[in-house]
Amino acid sequence: MAGTSMAAWRQYADGPQETCMTDEIAKWGRRIHGPTLPGSGIRCARETALTDAEMNEVVSTIATARAGRHSAFLPEHLRTRHWESTMTAMLSINARLGWPSAGWKIGAASLEVQRAEGMPGASPGQLARDGVHPSPARVPAHLFINYRCAESEFAFQMAHALPARTMPFSEDEVADAVASLHPALEIGDTVFQDWYGASGYFGAALDNNGAAAFVPGDPVTDWRHLDLAVARVDLSLNGTWQKSGVGAAAMGHPLTALTWVANWLRERGMGLQAGEFVSTGSCTGHFFVAPGDRLIADFGPLGKVDATFE
Image (cartoon, rainbow, N blue to C red; front, side):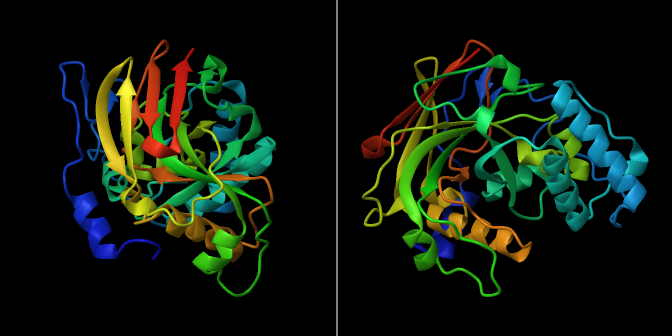
């Protein structure tokens, strides 16, 4: 693992994140994530795979809602905690939509978010080209249906492709394929009206792991000497500091997370393409914002990411 140990990651992830607590804005941002609190989603009973007919119905329901920018409801008979069915549905929904891709994000890369969403581990989502708005950004309202869930992340842009192959990629191979490191904000949304309520059947993972918008900061090309595991990010809302985190929050190190997604794609006969971004997971957990809010993620010497939400 690059730059840190698993023990150091777990020590960070198991401990409380530094947070500003106010009446309206607490650890999770504005209290607009639906009635279910983080980590309180009721698990559906089913753990078996979806049939072909059920898979088609799930894909059609979510793809139609995302294309039409409206909420969706999955009836009980279409809900399952079968992980491979969830991943197959997510990829099939993106294929049906056919939106041009700008790369990938990693959802639930931190233990904090895995607990909040009841996830067994990390999983990727696809970044749509239309959702990429470089900092300083005014992030348009049409990208969102129900939420704006902001995550401060380290992202990479690829210089070279990492196509599918039999052997796993090493961290050194993946690092050699990187063009630049970027501080970033990745903004999540879902067609489901109760974000954490839908976690009982992996709702966010089904729906592209929430990927809706991506705000990259300026590129950093000389990054390999940096200890990104301890690199700090401070998140401010409308001029007031709210919380902080470090690179170790997401799989212990951003490069470890990037290597993970390269191998996740490889195992499925897919690959990373030159020019694509990969946003490696939240260092500051989930933070929900509203239209009119301005977020600044300060990555210190790596720069700031500035996003105002329409």
